[in-house]
Image 1 (tube, rainbow, N blue to C red):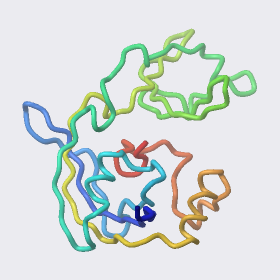
Image 2 (image 1 turned 120 degrees about the horizontal axis):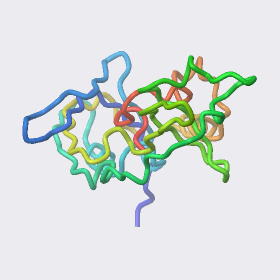
Image 3 (image 1 turned 135 degrees about the horizontal axis):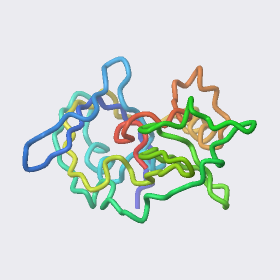
Length: 189
Protein backbone atom coordinates (compact mmCIF):
# COMPACT_ATOMS: atom_id res chain seq x y z
CA UNK A 1 0.00 0.00 0.00
CA UNK A 2 1.42 3.39 -1.02
CA UNK A 3 2.13 5.91 1.71
CA UNK A 4 -0.33 8.82 1.68
CA UNK A 5 1.41 12.14 1.11
CA UNK A 6 0.31 15.38 2.69
CA UNK A 7 -0.59 17.76 -0.14
CA UNK A 8 -0.26 21.53 -0.14
CA UNK A 9 -3.50 22.68 -1.76
CA UNK A 10 -4.56 26.22 -2.60
CA UNK A 11 -7.96 27.07 -4.06
CA UNK A 12 -9.73 30.21 -5.09
CA UNK A 13 -13.48 29.80 -4.62
CA UNK A 14 -16.92 31.24 -4.05
CA UNK A 15 -19.05 29.66 -1.34
CA UNK A 16 -22.83 29.77 -1.49
CA UNK A 17 -25.59 28.46 0.73
CA UNK A 18 -28.36 26.77 -1.24
CA UNK A 19 -32.04 26.73 -0.33
CA UNK A 20 -35.43 26.75 -2.05
CA UNK A 21 -34.94 30.44 -2.95
CA UNK A 22 -31.63 29.78 -4.75
CA UNK A 23 -27.93 30.34 -4.11
CA UNK A 24 -26.64 32.98 -1.68
CA UNK A 25 -22.99 34.09 -1.72
CA UNK A 26 -21.41 33.70 1.73
CA UNK A 27 -17.68 33.94 1.16
CA UNK A 28 -15.22 34.51 -1.65
CA UNK A 29 -11.45 34.16 -1.71
CA UNK A 30 -9.20 36.23 -3.95
CA UNK A 31 -6.21 35.33 -6.10
CA UNK A 32 -4.04 37.23 -3.60
CA UNK A 33 -5.48 35.32 -0.61
CA UNK A 34 -6.65 31.88 -1.68
CA UNK A 35 -7.68 29.26 0.85
CA UNK A 36 -4.63 27.06 1.35
CA UNK A 37 -4.15 24.05 3.58
CA UNK A 38 -2.18 20.86 3.96
CA UNK A 39 -4.26 17.74 3.50
CA UNK A 40 -4.58 15.20 6.28
CA UNK A 41 -4.54 17.65 9.20
CA UNK A 42 -8.27 18.32 9.52
CA UNK A 43 -8.12 22.00 8.59
CA UNK A 44 -10.62 21.58 5.78
CA UNK A 45 -13.98 19.88 5.95
CA UNK A 46 -13.33 16.23 5.16
CA UNK A 47 -15.81 16.24 2.26
CA UNK A 48 -14.29 19.46 0.87
CA UNK A 49 -10.79 18.00 1.06
CA UNK A 50 -11.96 14.77 -0.60
CA UNK A 51 -13.42 16.76 -3.52
CA UNK A 52 -10.30 18.87 -4.24
CA UNK A 53 -7.32 16.74 -3.17
CA UNK A 54 -7.01 14.88 -6.49
CA UNK A 55 -7.64 17.89 -8.74
CA UNK A 56 -4.65 19.30 -10.60
CA UNK A 57 -3.46 22.88 -10.59
CA UNK A 58 -5.61 24.86 -13.04
CA UNK A 59 -8.69 22.64 -12.75
CA UNK A 60 -12.02 24.21 -11.92
CA UNK A 61 -14.60 22.68 -9.63
CA UNK A 62 -18.22 23.03 -8.62
CA UNK A 63 -19.71 20.77 -5.99
CA UNK A 64 -22.34 20.77 -3.31
CA UNK A 65 -22.03 19.50 0.27
CA UNK A 66 -25.09 18.47 2.23
CA UNK A 67 -25.48 19.77 5.77
CA UNK A 68 -24.33 16.35 7.00
CA UNK A 69 -21.14 16.59 4.90
CA UNK A 70 -20.58 20.15 6.10
CA UNK A 71 -21.47 21.36 9.62
CA UNK A 72 -24.43 19.16 10.54
CA UNK A 73 -27.73 20.28 11.98
CA UNK A 74 -28.17 23.43 14.02
CA UNK A 75 -28.69 22.34 17.62
CA UNK A 76 -30.61 24.54 20.07
CA UNK A 77 -28.75 23.01 23.03
CA UNK A 78 -25.59 24.64 21.64
CA UNK A 79 -27.08 28.06 22.44
CA UNK A 80 -26.09 28.84 26.02
CA UNK A 81 -26.48 31.65 28.53
CA UNK A 82 -23.39 32.84 30.41
CA UNK A 83 -23.30 35.31 33.30
CA UNK A 84 -22.20 38.78 32.21
CA UNK A 85 -19.47 38.67 34.86
CA UNK A 86 -17.63 36.11 32.69
CA UNK A 87 -16.99 39.01 30.31
CA UNK A 88 -15.89 41.50 32.96
CA UNK A 89 -12.40 42.97 33.00
CA UNK A 90 -11.25 44.90 36.05
CA UNK A 91 -14.85 45.05 37.31
CA UNK A 92 -16.24 46.49 34.03
CA UNK A 93 -18.24 44.64 31.34
CA UNK A 94 -16.22 44.40 28.08
CA UNK A 95 -18.59 46.36 25.80
CA UNK A 96 -15.84 46.83 23.22
CA UNK A 97 -15.68 43.10 22.40
CA UNK A 98 -19.00 41.69 23.64
CA UNK A 99 -21.90 42.89 21.50
CA UNK A 100 -24.61 41.26 19.42
CA UNK A 101 -23.01 39.50 16.44
CA UNK A 102 -19.49 39.45 17.89
CA UNK A 103 -17.53 36.21 17.57
CA UNK A 104 -15.68 35.62 20.82
CA UNK A 105 -13.02 33.12 21.89
CA UNK A 106 -14.09 30.90 24.76
CA UNK A 107 -12.51 28.15 26.83
CA UNK A 108 -14.20 25.32 28.71
CA UNK A 109 -13.21 23.81 32.05
CA UNK A 110 -11.03 21.23 30.23
CA UNK A 111 -8.98 24.01 28.61
CA UNK A 112 -10.39 23.48 25.10
CA UNK A 113 -10.62 26.66 23.02
CA UNK A 114 -13.53 27.41 20.68
CA UNK A 115 -15.55 30.32 19.35
CA UNK A 116 -19.12 31.42 19.96
CA UNK A 117 -21.29 34.16 18.49
CA UNK A 118 -23.07 36.63 20.78
CA UNK A 119 -26.78 36.53 19.91
CA UNK A 120 -28.35 38.42 22.83
CA UNK A 121 -27.37 40.57 25.81
CA UNK A 122 -29.48 41.06 28.93
CA UNK A 123 -28.77 42.78 32.24
CA UNK A 124 -27.55 39.50 33.75
CA UNK A 125 -26.53 37.25 30.87
CA UNK A 126 -24.89 36.92 27.47
CA UNK A 127 -26.48 34.37 25.12
CA UNK A 128 -23.84 32.62 23.00
CA UNK A 129 -24.49 30.43 19.95
CA UNK A 130 -21.87 27.69 19.70
CA UNK A 131 -23.25 26.28 16.45
CA UNK A 132 -21.12 26.85 13.38
CA UNK A 133 -22.65 29.79 11.47
CA UNK A 134 -23.36 27.45 8.54
CA UNK A 135 -24.83 24.58 10.57
CA UNK A 136 -27.95 23.24 8.89
CA UNK A 137 -26.97 24.65 5.48
CA UNK A 138 -26.32 23.00 2.12
CA UNK A 139 -23.11 24.48 0.72
CA UNK A 140 -22.05 25.05 -2.88
CA UNK A 141 -18.39 25.63 -3.71
CA UNK A 142 -17.26 26.86 -7.13
CA UNK A 143 -13.65 27.63 -7.86
CA UNK A 144 -10.19 26.96 -9.23
CA UNK A 145 -7.27 24.92 -7.91
CA UNK A 146 -4.28 27.30 -7.88
CA UNK A 147 -1.83 24.81 -6.36
CA UNK A 148 -1.77 21.08 -5.61
CA UNK A 149 1.56 19.44 -4.83
CA UNK A 150 3.30 17.44 -2.15
CA UNK A 151 3.79 19.57 0.95
CA UNK A 152 7.39 20.22 1.91
CA UNK A 153 8.78 19.15 5.28
CA UNK A 154 9.17 22.86 6.11
CA UNK A 155 5.49 23.58 5.36
CA UNK A 156 4.40 20.63 7.48
CA UNK A 157 6.66 21.78 10.34
CA UNK A 158 5.29 25.34 10.08
CA UNK A 159 1.75 23.94 10.31
CA UNK A 160 2.67 21.85 13.35
CA UNK A 161 4.14 24.98 14.96
CA UNK A 162 0.89 26.86 14.22
CA UNK A 163 -1.15 24.06 15.78
CA UNK A 164 0.93 24.39 18.93
CA UNK A 165 0.65 28.20 18.95
CA UNK A 166 4.25 28.76 17.96
CA UNK A 167 3.75 30.69 14.73
CA UNK A 168 4.56 34.32 14.10
CA UNK A 169 1.20 35.47 12.76
CA UNK A 170 2.75 38.48 11.05
CA UNK A 171 4.72 36.11 8.82
CA UNK A 172 2.24 33.31 8.19
CA UNK A 173 -0.80 35.49 7.60
CA UNK A 174 -3.05 33.35 9.75
CA UNK A 175 -5.92 34.92 11.60
CA UNK A 176 -6.65 32.41 14.33
CA UNK A 177 -7.31 35.00 16.98
CA UNK A 178 -10.07 36.91 15.23
CA UNK A 179 -12.78 34.30 14.85
CA UNK A 180 -13.85 36.15 11.72
CA UNK A 181 -15.27 34.50 8.67
CA UNK A 182 -17.73 31.70 8.34
CA UNK A 183 -15.00 29.12 8.67
CA UNK A 184 -15.76 27.46 5.41
CA UNK A 185 -12.70 28.69 3.68
CA UNK A 186 -10.37 29.51 6.43
CA UNK A 187 -11.43 27.40 9.36
CA UNK A 188 -12.79 24.17 8.04
CA UNK A 189 -13.00 22.14 11.22
